[in-house]
Each structure stands twice: as structure tokens, then as C-alpha cells.
Length: 125
Image 1 (cartoon, one colour):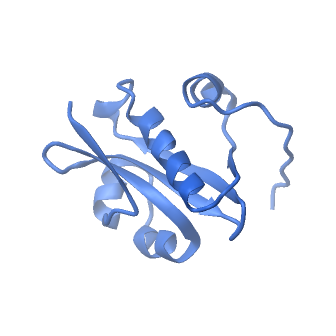
Image 2 (cartoon, helix red, strand yellow):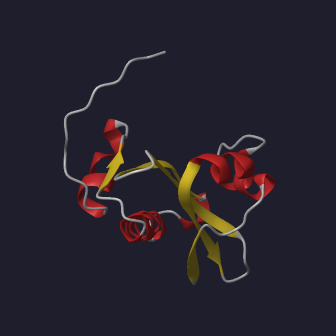
């Protein structure tokens, strides 16, 4: 499968909803609040992957909402999405890229994507 990856590429809410659990207004939300995002598209132009990169306006960027369409999973699409996001965050001047994930994704983020473990905390609001 030939996949292209593009930083801050246009997408619409309907096509993102076909790949992931998205909600109306996603396009407007990432444009307003994100450093950027990466879209992965197959040779036919269909969206097969997406990752959002939020940031603090300074040196810290945050991976959010890594999604890969079922038909494109386990083929390296997610890893390449994260690698592209990391390269673009670095190019934007960020010094750190953070990610939170559920335990079943540990091997993906730590082994496949190259993140290192870090202590963190969270408060349910």
C-alpha cells in the first residue's frame, strides 16, 4: 500500500470520522488549538491515518489522537505518522514531544516510536 504523509494537510470531519471516533468541528478545533497534525492518505487519496500535535506555545508538543484505519493497521502507518509529527514539532522549535497512552499501547509508543518512559500524573475533572 502506497501511503503519503502530509503536515497540516486539509481534511474534513466526515472523512476523519470514517477513520476514527471523531466529532463535528474537528477541523476547526485543530486549526485553532494545534501546532499541527499529520494526515496519511493512500494512493487513491483516502484518509487512512491521522495524528494531532498540540503544544504549549513553547518547547513542549503533545501527541494526541493517533488513529489508523483498520485496513492500514500493522503496516507502519502509525509509526510513520508519529515520526512525521516528531520531525515537524522539532522543526517548529519544540524541544520535547510528550505522549500519554493506555498500557496496551506501551510497546507501540516505547519500542516502535522511540519514546522513553516518564513519570506523569493526571487528575480526572
